[in-house]
Length: 284
Length: 284
Image: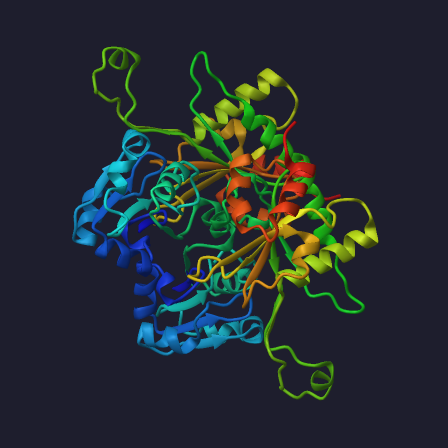
């Protein structure tokens, strides 16, 4: 059996009792380490599980999935995923490959950023579709997020934006020369996300949002040092919420006054918060 | 400290290691038992935790919250919630009351139906806002869900519909006479939800969905006997997916072919599935 085990969001104790039982008895344990990260390293997990953990990078999962699945028809293999196994869409290939090989699969659910974001005080009922933001380059600035956000804002809903992470990237030069030398990992910050959002609004000028739209910068959600900063997109361009992972919520028009009272506690600047709230969110 | 501890969705082992530590050391342990249910009873939880659990019904949480919070300024109190603490919105009052009393609060996240619904094979990215369906009565048929679904379908998104549960209800007669005699619990079924949806469409006639719209009836999501049935709303009116809890997903137009391949495995009738898919979801 291939088990996809959700690890939750913060540390080694966020695994479920059911998930831990699977990890303890599995023949091999893989840790998916390229779509998200816990706030503890592999060593901490190994000590907690009292067994070795194999870090699976994207290359391994995409090119060597049969290696991961070897023997899974007879023994149990645990594939650990930060958050919930269904949170990221990238593991479908592994599951489909297992099915081709007649290997049964099972998911052990856990908290995902999609529900843990409720810690902001925003109602989960008021969120539209979740979108992703990738790192822009000089020549590649994918803006499909802009249309998705428009769809959400057009019906007054909040948008959760998940931010890019880059792990085991090669420089163009190293890639060209076939050298397996990797750049340090990069995690998009709330400030970078806000800047990219404003860059695209500035280019398209369709008023999907603007410099004084309210958003919440979120860092290390569900961890003890979780941090929220609520401000205008312009303010968030200069706001440092600390170490990764970050995400951002753009406020929908339909935001309720109970939600306001809660998120105002995180306001970067209460005066500008009130101005933007009154401009975009206050009911007549 | 007041801890809101998510229990996950199926059985006693879905609690996180972190959550279990809190339960083991808390002075008192309450189980919120009116917005959702696990598939195991209080006794199973007590045996697993090796300590007593106090069942908290709606009346207790809403009218006697100070009793729950007594001593929480000095000791730890655990308030257990099925799924994720942020999944339901009804605990805000308890948290606000704790804050008034200067009692710190902390949430221990867990899986919620909002992410576990990914087990259907539908992409969580393609869901719009979540809606709730309550039991209709002869005189009360709240239809606000219809407008919410329209908003989602207008931008092609799936809608997760959470179904009503009624626990410790009194009959009108018993209520009038002040007798604390309660009706047996009721859990809305997929079939009842589909019927109520068609009843409202039939009344409003705004073509938000129709008899042959595709939906997935979901039962006991994340449990070993989890069951999905994909069919038209008309078919689901006559489909029995077994014991509670149920929920329903109405398919959005933007459904992807990879999603189709997955959900077709649960089709009540492959022929009608293909007809509806081709009518509403196939790309030109």
